[in-house]
Image (cartoon, rainbow, N blue to C red; front, side):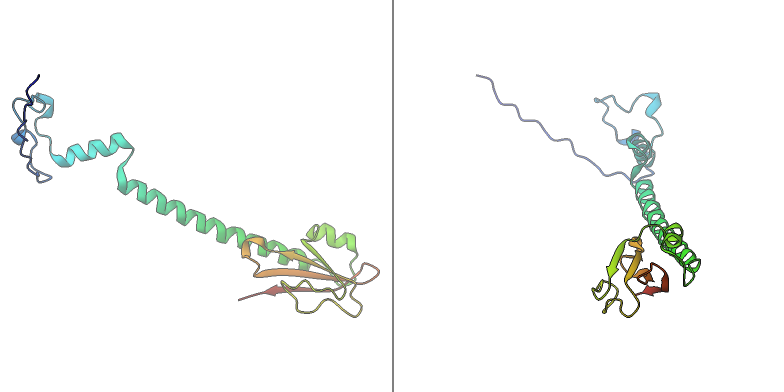
Length: 167
């Protein structure tokens, strides 16, 4: 049977960041008595450790914040670009333009609303009177706060255009 040996714990002392590690190193461990370790401070060791681990916490947080700021700027720029493009394209469609001209200027609609059947996301009433169809173009990045519509009569001619925004 083997005797159980108790080990005496080594007392640890928290060093000031500028305090030399070699002054408190254990002589029997032989780790910091080498010439390469002399003059090291805790601050230097931590900086070396951070570089070895991949730039440390401060840089990672900074990169995260710049990344989030970049995503926000890209979102706002994309939303604004879509808005400007649709507004410019809608302005180029005059009253009386044909269905083909609308398709060339704006592309296929996101939603086609038929007479007396409202597309309730943006309108409380369906198109009526001479209106046979209302084509909706949405800004998907705007989270349904902006849309453009083109109203067509029975002969597929534009009778009205509009831009809707929500606060």
